[in-house]
Image (cartoon, rainbow, N blue to C red):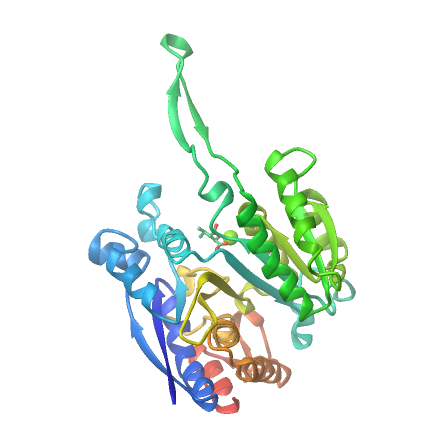
Length: 367
Ligand code: IPM
Ligand code: MG
């Protein structure tokens, strides 16, 4: 059997609950595909602040660089909300993203038929949604320099100035565009590139470079859309989208909007893929649910493990090359929901409402 090295960062809040419920499923499906998972666990986020004073230690980043894939629960919580922004739990995510060069963030949003009624939008609008947001994750205004807050002026004209920089260079746009076009090839063959090219120079370059990459993919249709229009189109007619490719900040916003179309953020997985190839010839990646640490329900068995379970499916697909295993997990999740089983966030009839572990067990038994 081949062996895969997986680093697990359960994090804070419900993170540890959903990750521990998911691991046996990941291990079972990987092993059916001929891969044994060697799992090690480490601290990231608030729990690391408590232990080491910082959200991500060099040692954990070093460990992360050596594995085939990282599985993360969630970070953050009220206990650490008062900390200055450089030491908050969320910095662990940014440190992992830049440290592992995870430039491509994939956030699929798919309506599961059994959950149609869970969306706040009308069923006829959201029915059949199946889109993928490809968000650039290591550039743009999140990392651009100069950045900061400084004091300007003097005397009674003194005031503060806060500033950040949106910056993209050709090579960064090329590589994220390629991820989007490759993904579209395996889907409905349409890429919508989202920018603000009517205002921003960085977006003008973005649009130009994406059009250049598109020439290598004549079988995929490219459409350009301004970000404000895209925000509107997502709630007006989300079925028009297949793959959306966009910048770090726009992708942050649009992926939350896309997530909500499907009704429950508790269902959505994500993959962040790096430049580096792992021992399987696949992208080294980090996999995590889109939802946060949900401190209000921590430790009560109420958390929905399905987003993390679906993230494990993405791990099998993108970092271990086990497409069949990924599909197996996705099919079983749909099946369990079709049978009426629900976690608390999804509602559900008396007797079919399951705890975190019970839901994970249903999936584990059926995969
Ligand atoms: C996300 C989150 C993060 C981001 C925060 C927690 C740093 O909102 O993954 O979308 O802004 O990227
Ligand atoms: Mg976000």
